[in-house]
Image (tube, rainbow, N blue to C red; front, side, top):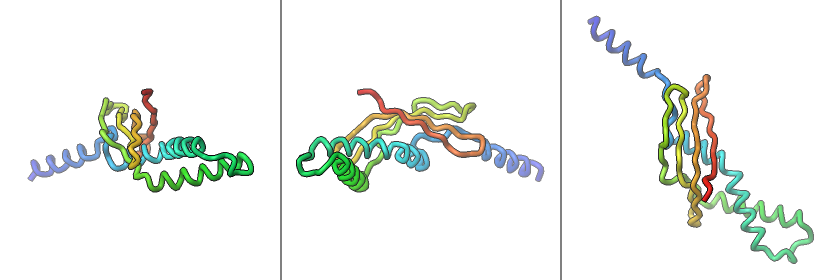
Length: 134
């Protein structure tokens, strides 16, 4: 009976050990996509503005408003996701993972990024995202 109690206790203790977040977890992917949303929309906005006939607008504010609205609509329909997710390094002492991935959408746009995920003292995950230079 003592052996079972010791094994169960060890299993409970090991199960509570903190580990660095996993690069491909659903939570990590959601955090990275949330962190990059505004940058992606900004890219779509710039592309839309560059293809407008500016003579159709009364002023620059109309151009910006129109472009931003179209970019948000485009983002909502773009099926943006992470692809080819890679774990570059894991530090279980600092509870930090370094990762790489491609952000892709259904319009065949692809951008390489690197990101870090770190577990905070209170159990939250902080992420930092960097666009790779191509």
